[in-house]
Image (cartoon, rainbow, N blue to C red; front, side, top):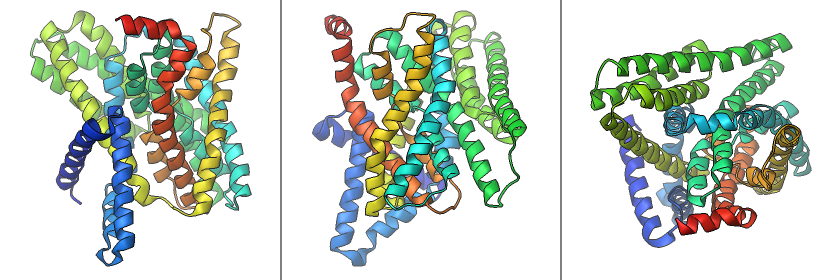
Length: 425
């Protein structure tokens, strides 16, 4: 399927399913598209079972796999969506909770990844699925980061208290970089064990972390600064919007060539332009144009991504052992998330006040999404790969459909004063 055809089909389906959700399902927009995609997928599978000579399921499966979901998300959508989220994030509010956010996005992700990896190794064995430990740790790395795309929309709709909302959104903007780097390390070790790569030692891991993290931040600052300086020389809203879009694509290209973290670079550039640029380099007209265009880009890509997640059901292994393992790992991954949140928060409580219910809200509000599915689809061939992909998919669907729909209720129960304030407003 050529790029233009794929874009036409996906945008048409997103619009049609969005209309179906608006009039029939009446779910939050992103969740409604996911559910619509799942319903359409199940309808195709059902029709294929009744009339197998049509070969409809095979055609749709080939089309979905032909889209290269992993590259589409990781090399295309992710940087654009992270930049859009960072562009609208108040850096002053982010700085107030920077310690908590950095702890959750770094140590929290590492702790959660290791915990999820070991539990996955044990539980898959219980279901008769033999997967080497290193690949279970890679699963832990891909499933531990929260999805910024899911989190941004759901937390705003849930009317979370500002302090909590900033912690969750700030963490989700930063922890993808940590998750992708951890995933890269575990995959490298796994391939080395299979003779597919050189062994990565401790020094190599430290070098990779420094290169990805520090290099990504430096790239984002440099790109954001160049864009900002250009803004100060003109007042042409359309050109300035074009420059921001170009900045994100240049970041993605350079990061891929230099092996830097494109997610961290996109977030850094977005924060710099969205805060420093608004203060001293943009007219009101430019700010309005920038907000309109990037909101449109954000919501359009968001819609397409959640639709794609619903359609990826055609690419997974639907054997009972894999599906039941996925269901069994839902509470295990939630527990790993709880541990990854609780340890940094308890450590921070020694030095600062943390709101009540923070651990529970961060645990249940840590939604998984397209990034986890994309990383799972990027895994190389090994024994148990299909099981890991299925388990990831089951957890992501549960996270978006169940946690996403109930997080507002959890917030209202733990913070009734916030719910009352939002009702008055």
